[in-house]
Amino acid sequence: MLRHLFTLIWNRKRANLLLISEIFFSFVVLFGVGTVLITAARNYLAPRGFEPTQVWRLLVRAGQGQKMPRAELDDVLRQVKALPGVQTVALTSNNLPFTFNTNNSDFIYKDRKSPFANTYDADDHYAEALRLRLREGRWFAPADDGTHHRPVVISQDLRDILFGDEPALGKIFTYNIPGKATKPEDEFQVVGVVDNVRMTTDFDEAIPSVWKRLIPYDTTHWETAAVLVRVAPDQGGVLQEKIARTVAGVTRQWSTEVRVMEDDRLHRRLYTLVPVVGLCIMGLFLIINVALGLFGVLWYNISQRRAEIGLRRAMGATGAGIGWQFLGEMMVVTTFGVILGSLLAAQFPLLNAFDLPAQPYLLAIGAAAGAVYLITALCAWQPSRLAASIQPAVALREE
Image 1 (cartoon, rainbow, N blue to C red):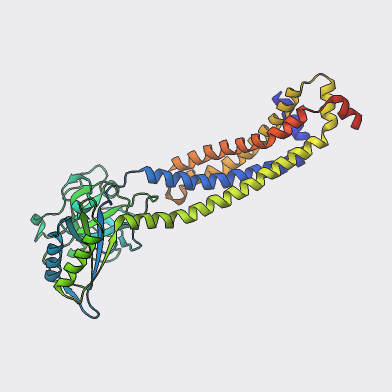
Image 2 (image 1 turned 90 degrees about the horizontal axis):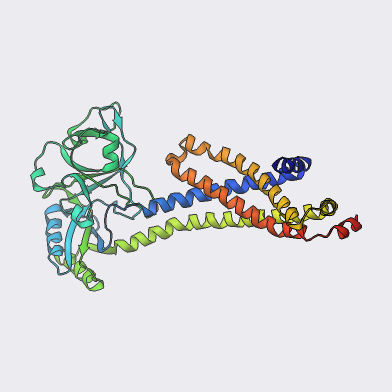
């Protein structure tokens, strides 16, 4: 039976070549959309590595042309921490989670180089504010005051890249600056390792990260200070107003912006979803057009082969047999298109395209193949029923 189907397909190779081309491009589109959706879903379901709920971010700015002394800033943070409903206050850098600010660098340990990693400044209360999960060592503590090398905490993925199976705690790594001598301020000592974190959007993968300790009570003057505040459940606008008044009470020349981190997360989610939804709509529109084309071509093929169908029915073929024959022809033609599309799609995991693991690509190939077969079967079902209902006497009389 299969050999007979191949013979029929070969006899109509020009028409079937067009169908194979349509199926091939449909597969490629579905593979691309599937890869994006599977990767986004895979990242969304992965652990975030921290808890953004009940966390607010403050952006404290000095007056125009002025700076905030660190001692005065620390006094403000202590007063904010004393407010009822505030659990933890942490000073950090401006590249806060779910914002568009980024700060990244690459590092080196012996001959091992890291990709660009997100770098954050963090004080001793940062891990408590975001509830980072320690895997090794500890977070920053007063015991780190006066250390020769700047203490850092790194994420697990960066630990695996730089140190592999070696112990990481106590090791010293540096910025990757080829051709320049290493300065003491460019050397970092690992005191802890935390879980991988996803601080950009819900749909991005974890990025290697480094947290550098902010030395308390230093003499730095700040123009802008980013602060994380973990609050008790069910806190709202009243506490936000108290925080703003507390900051203004120190000096009326400072301004304060209070944002809820959960709102930032939802904003970044929407910002990420818009192009993905647009891509899905374009892919759906293309697939609908391809499906309509397949349906029309199959309908036309049946009208052109009425004499063949009538002859087969006159020789004893059943209506169901005729219907399965046309459906089988389309499945064979679809297989050719899927094979060609799979050969193209297989190059992506083989070449490690876009630095993605092989799993999303393989899942997308399987999903695209299944969707193409389903679309083809649905398009071929009604024309096959039409072929099965043709009576031999009517078909032969028309000829």
